[in-house]
Length: 460
Image (cartoon, rainbow, N blue to C red; front, side, top):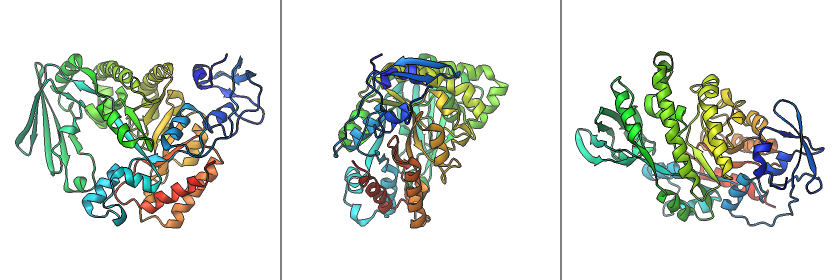
């Protein structure tokens, strides 16, 4: 074989390299910091999943020392490709913090007249952005949007983020927004609520009523899904990339995997659990219909010029239990991962909830990047446990919990958490650091600068 390590993913997936003094995966994920000392095209013996030995030849690169000066985009792209970089990448989302600080009047004086990109540059942290790759075109559907009793919008055959079109919510006003979908099969309703607090803190409108609430809703949703299709929507991606430039990275997102979409978008967690027992045929129909759409939007996302695509799954292990994850999530994720890997890209999943119940199952899923990972103290899973389970198998992006950037955490405790993280990494660069899930209103910007300075000392 003469392909690169990443190109041999189908051979290497799930295998453990037996190399005296080093691990093959370390050479990839650690950015070449500890290259494997073997001759070019040397034979390599690996242990297969069943414990059997597999011998194959593979070309190994010898990484020359790197000069300083990589951009944050170059660092992120290098880690995603398993290539060396000069230090650990550092990128996050400050959008909600920025909006909340602006609205509440708590913006540090230094940043009051700066735009968000300039703040990222001043703090030394790359900007992470998401861009939805496609919208769903609803054919034969009329939509009306009502806010507090007044019709504020009407559309026929709309293109939107179905079935949770938060883009239709009246902005900057507390109250309920009702979105009514009218079809030949009947009508179905979605209701969002905004409050003074959610507006001030730049939170998303809360989904009060999902589209599948009553028995009559199912026929309407089935009609919509049977006649809808995803349409490419690449403007947000290119707009974000233009704004960020080399100081960050835009992730093309492709919605949720089918089961997570049923739970979080179509029915709600409790109703889904009941339906699995009481009306399993409805769940099976939804999973099948949503699978077709999810694989279609995945193809659209892979057409964008990014090495990564991501499902916005918002996993929470106490809701999507290990049994549900194993039965309804892993098979689809593995199929999606095979398609993504076949295009030479990596697949991410937004896993920002309590991953402790699922930590041992994630490597089986085929997912390459656990994005927005939020360990203890924000969730019950300690970083050290996740690192032990996922190192050399799954890349983490996020990792530093948002809570330790808040004033209620003492500075000494914050610094101890950061230094403990670097002790645990033990020189590895196979990670992308950020704030998990993201920076929020009370974030202390000087602590972001602390991490930036700490990483700068690692460069080289």
